[in-house]
Amino acid sequence: MAGEYNTKKENVKKGVNGVLFGGSIAAWKERNGVSMAARSEGMERIQKEVKRARVLVAEREKKRSPGARGMKDCALLSRAVGREEEWVMQRVQARVEREGWRVGTMIHDAIIVTRHKGGDDKAKLVATVQAALEEATAERGWATGLIRAKVTAT
Image (spheres, rainbow, N blue to C red):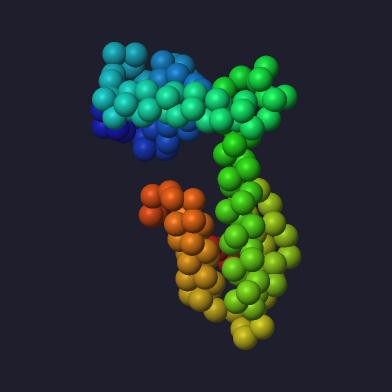
């Protein structure tokens, strides 16, 4: 897509994220200096599919919570994504703790692991996190490899 838009990959990622949460391709192009004439069938397909998914998620959220009826679809999608993200992070935290690490802090999309009872083996931590993500995606019926994690030393 970066080639089709004659822009950097990082700009395309911003566009995809914007589309995921209700933005338009045109608004993204304007903000990032992309020619309005440039087109990408892939990005347009993503926008259509995300819009359909956003409507379905919003309908489910409205059925789940009567107080959600007056909320915008994008806000409902954001709430649902946040809830799933929290669930995944709790799964990762539980798995990491079962394997002997001590979790100091859990933030929306980060877990601070303080140490392991048998030493600090980054490769083992990476494998543990990956296993937790694979379990979570399988349990929810999501595509394999949908969720990835970056493990860094502090």
